[in-house]
Image (cartoon, rainbow, N blue to C red):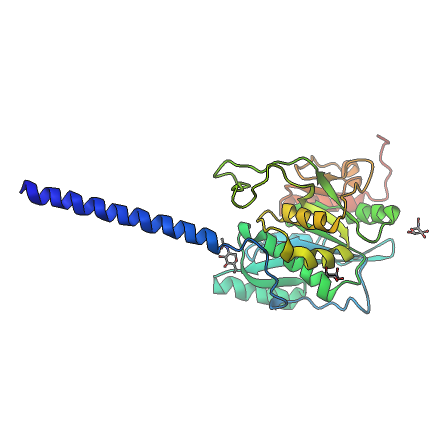
Length: 311
Ligand SMILES: *[C@@H]1O[C@H](CO)[C@@H](O)[C@H](O)[C@H]1NC(C)=O
Ligand SMILES: *[C@@H]1O[C@H](CO)[C@@H](O)[C@H](O)[C@H]1NC(C)=O
Ligand SMILES: *[C@@H]1O[C@H](CO)[C@@H](O)[C@H](O)[C@H]1NC(C)=O
């Protein structure tokens, strides 16, 4: 009796040991298999917009990262800053960057939306946060192949307010058309090593103690030549799932320096309270839900011609 119970414990411990061994081998091998460089897959788009950039090149292309589920946010953007627009005689076009969903219905809805609006760029990677770098690089690839004639590109997010009027004005004033990259500059950022944080990065993924300069992924703007150049070097820099940091690594390799767009702050990745006068003099504001976006946009457009008190 005692003997058989001992044997049971013995077998149990043996099994536990084997399990541990398997598990550690599994995690080790999954580390090894992780792609620590970005791999171009040249084409293979699931959805492409209809635009002929050769014959009517836009001045500014807005690329908005979005996921299949965010139908309402896309609709609000199409009715506000993402509407096809001409500002100071310059054409502005907005496109959405999407990954794939494993839900067939969602994929069907995206395909229909793409048919109707012709503004969706989609590839077959799983649309999850850790794949955001793939999404951004899809945008760079698209500009490189389909719209290098655009003057400028902005990469932004679907919970943003973008003042295309002020952005166009500032870009024209800046008058820098190549190797130009701007946004909310982050010159001194450190990797977050706390597990369970959304921005956690292991020492394995990024061994260095400090990030190279980059612009907040909530909204950055660049001359369109930068898209081709970033796409070109993307396979030769270490891969990191934080897309803005990754683009920063590419820019460092290309020796492209980040620049301020304006002497005053115009990018607000941490959000900003709305007032028409305040928002007239900003480019990008984060944390805007679709109903607020519609209201704010109406208020901005309704007061565009009005004077604001000098600050
Ligand atoms: C990211 O996308 C790739 C390509 O589809 C996929 O293999 C990978 O599992 C995705 N990552 C996650 C965490 O789902
Ligand atoms: C823009 O810059 C170019 C040279 O880079 C210059 O020739 C041109 O006059 C500038 N335009 C304006 C409006 O400042
Ligand atoms: C891509 O890189 C190669 C080699 O570094 C270079 O010859 C080529 O001009 C680059 N192309 C672009 C579009 O930057």
